[in-house]
Image 1 (spheres, rainbow, N blue to C red):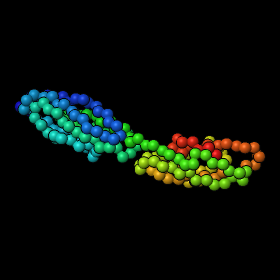
Image 2: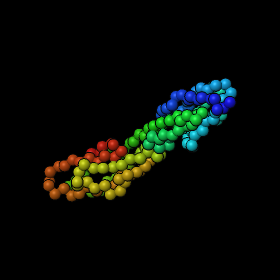
Image 3: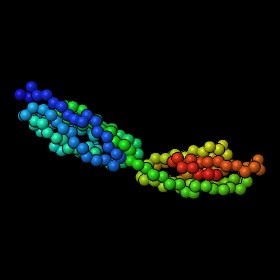
Length: 169
């Protein structure tokens, strides 16, 4: 009878890269004991979703469209299996990587290239450089900035960091 059935599911945790992948959960129980496998996550596909006796559940985790990791669960034979997935790997390019201004200062634009959904931000280490647009972005974009008039007549150097990439001013 189902009342005398005991269940185990292993492994209890699975880790996936941002690209996703496939794995299995092994169900251990007595012959004739029914079980089901479900997940509330829309990025997890399970097959088979039910069985009887000991068996294997195959599941697939879809690629993560975000650069932020995510987690979820499967319930297999009443046991929770935790799924941890890394975010997608984002690569960033910025152009130009340096810019020069005369004593009068001026305005500049930095172009950011990356994959769709990859988030980035722009900051500066100099109080005479002001980011006027694009301090935060996602995917390809631009950062606009203003360099203030140099009233000291001494050359100065500052940096704008865009997606962790330095742009020397």
